[in-house]
Length: 284
Image (cartoon, rainbow, N blue to C red; front, top):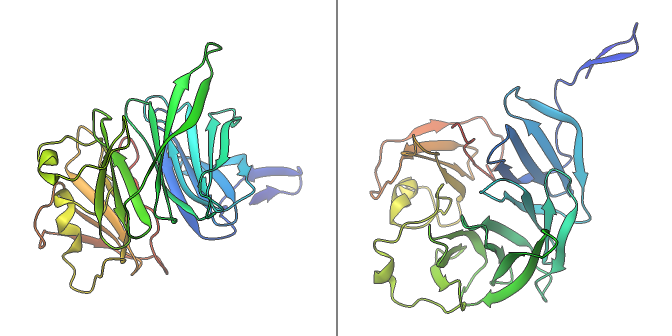
């Protein structure tokens, strides 16, 4: 902090940080705000336009924050994924809770969250190998109500990413053992025939690390299936790029889609440890 002691006045906050590893990250869909969450349970907000922290805007939670996402339609909701199988949905910007529940009986970490573009669904990937599908409805009072709709089973390892089809009819998960699974959101039925997804349009930005769209991110011969932690497609109208972060402290940039294993790649190093989350701002 830069302080003017003669006037007893705070001039500027130069830098703040989380007290532990930051794993959760998302940009607000309408405001120049970014939110991040850490393993110590704090959620911090950042002024993207001015590239500085939003002073005094810190949310303290009871559990570690491993995933965070805003409602894509208007950003009026923010979901948090915690330890102990806990998921919270908060109204934004008031940060008043409208849902708080332990979804996992095994009390495992909720590591992946994504709202559907329709605003009807929230998918929560948990280390108990389940994906929890929550349904959002509007009550007569006008408030949003959230309830568990289906538990989506079938993963043989922990989910690492979840996302919906553009029409919100299907939800997809990636897992630690490089498995891709699909379910119907209406009844939670697993989809066994992969051919039906050949021409499926998926919500933007693409954030899964597996799939033909992102084969190119696995071109590095040093990678195994666990070395890429996060990926994100750039936003429209310039949505032809994909950034991803790896265990070697690098952020890499390739073309999107990238269905080949040897795409041209730009490498940006500098992190001293794993890059845990990558997202584009709405203006890229």
